Image (tube, rainbow, N blue to C red):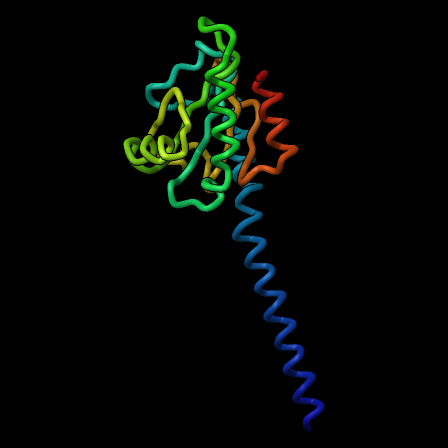
Length: 171
């Protein structure tokens, strides 16, 4: 009987581990894939953010963040780099790219958070991220001068993705 009990306990543990892995995969990785699909549908019409006009820069990086998001905080050094690159645009009349932040949190709170991280942006917009097809933060969306979505990056970026974003923005 002891041998049968051990085997059944091992089977229960294995089933629990598999169930946990499946839940983790669905919770964290499926959301990122779904977000890319939802935002990609927005490429058929311009992205709409209140108070933001797209035409003054060749590209705009829209960063969706939440001040309580650990991955957003971990991404701040890269966003700081983007902020510096955006501030060093060679042409003030038509800069290569602008930086905008979208959040479901109050704009003043997000501005304070950005200031603490020494990040300057052109605008901070409070929107329901779900209405933009975003359900995970951070999300970085590259938009062209007409407001159409060109590229979407969901989650904290790897170094190679950081370089890809910089390249795509023409910085």
